[in-house]
Image 1 (tube, rainbow, N blue to C red):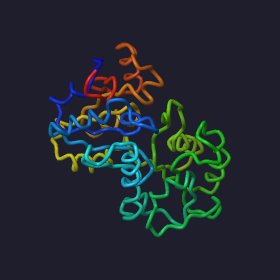
Image 2: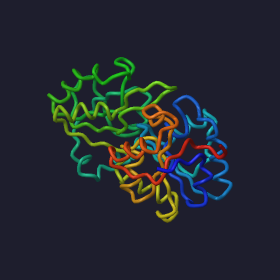
Image 3: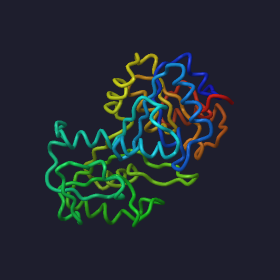
Image 4: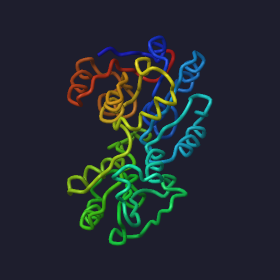
Length: 287
């Protein structure tokens, strides 16, 4: 698998860029070196950029976070988050799974994720016994984000009450300042093992790419997605019919190091059943 050193090597081949946020643009605390400059160079060349994230929060919330990191809205054309898609589907209830939801919601996750249900006619309850369904936005402060084990008794209680789970972040893990932490997808895995009914919103579901491609306004053959996670970023791009490039930052750097061999990349891609067109050392313009 060819390793690209800079994003400049992609600029001639592609006009539309779908960029993962956490693991490609930043590490959860600050942008990776060279990212602001790379975005400015792409924009200066007329490239269209949409940020696509499995964040369980509304797009405006993520935009505010990026601005606080120095990545303001002039550097991209739009943001699509799984939280925004989930909010829309909860509002419209046109999808059969969402239309079937009844009763109040029991929430697993931190308070900061509740933009995903803001201004909706939704009541949150304190226990699974009071609920009609389960809203999973990820680990909470009480049980922590090191492992899914502390959540097992709570998930078993939810399963006993047959609560369908809405998982608003299919990611299984994320890197925060060099530390690997679990995401909502890890809790979704546990719940499915218990026989629970789960709806996951976000990559790799091609549905979330519909808004992305519409916002880009670029022919799919001239669009590339850049992400650090095979299960979501790379597979999602393939499901949407666009090229994928594997960023060697975030989870990729944690699992394979910053300078993996071609053989290791090929073997891992085959194991994950994905076919990225190349790997990218990091999202920067110059080496």
